[in-house]
Length: 224
Ligand SMILES: *Cc1c(COP(=O)(O)O)cnc(C)c1O
Image 1: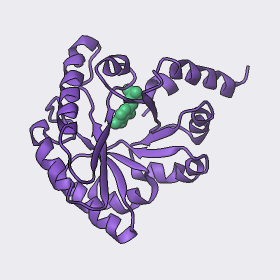
Image 2: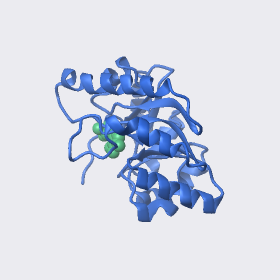
Image 3: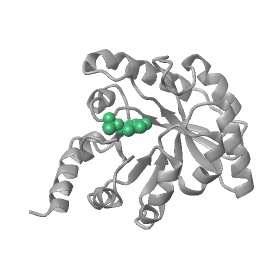
Image 4: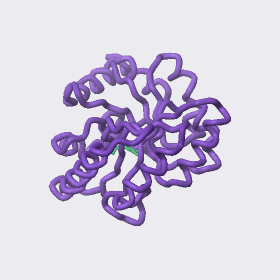
């Protein structure tokens, strides 16, 4: 049996568990170009990377396929220029300062950049993301950035084997998303709610996620 065919069969099996109105992002940090190409081959349309330097090495091969490239890891301000050159969407905008730097560098490039705002819904200190109570205020300020287009919100839930313990975070996030959607702000059109990973995506979808980011379940455990 051919390794790549086996791999693709596994990817297809996981794709079948995702409802058609939910978008799958393959979280590909540490994965080879070959694994990524096989994922694109079976119909995965968005590749999510965490580190700008790693993403730059993979960019060309992925761009040639027409698949979209999303930044899902924390973005340092000194990597903004490089990130803007390669990413179709930056899901991990986690501060006003970062948003303003993105806006400034977009102006120089003549680019309008789709972004999501990352919300630290659990309030854990180890997590990135804006404070949920400040979401309205930050959206309003980012709405004044002419080179950014806010397309949604993103979150990372606390890790737990007990899925029922993470459900309330997804539920709270969906409530926040719906509340923010009820306001109309220039340059803000909240369509995407990016939440749910390998072990949690089914619960996240039940709670209203329309974009899930899956790594381990597609590609196997990561070795660091
Ligand atoms: C790695 C990663 C994922 C995927 O995690 P898995 O548990 O491997 O599915 C999703 N989102 C972000 C931001 C990640 O860094």
